[in-house]
Picture 1 (cartoon, rainbow, N blue to C red):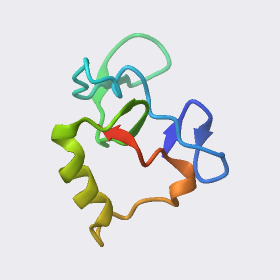
Picture 2 (cartoon, one colour):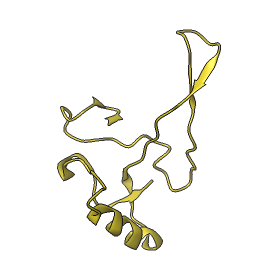
Picture 3 (cartoon, one colour):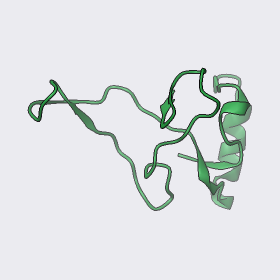
Picture 4 (cartoon, rainbow, N blue to C red):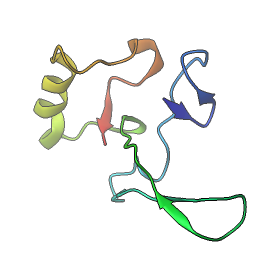
Length: 89
């Protein structure tokens, strides 16, 4: 998991990327340049998501987020790394 503080568990807290974590934005993916300059692009092959540090879980999302966090296959990192009260995205 990567964020503004870098990647992996060596950091103190994951930082969801903004603006994708905003309730007013729809994040749908992106591309990377194939080299170090502007040119041909390749679509991202990995997705992302998380829990916002800025926006609380809205009422319409509360049941789904609670169920996700309780699911045995959620494979969540240790809770100290992410905001358990933030909206899911």
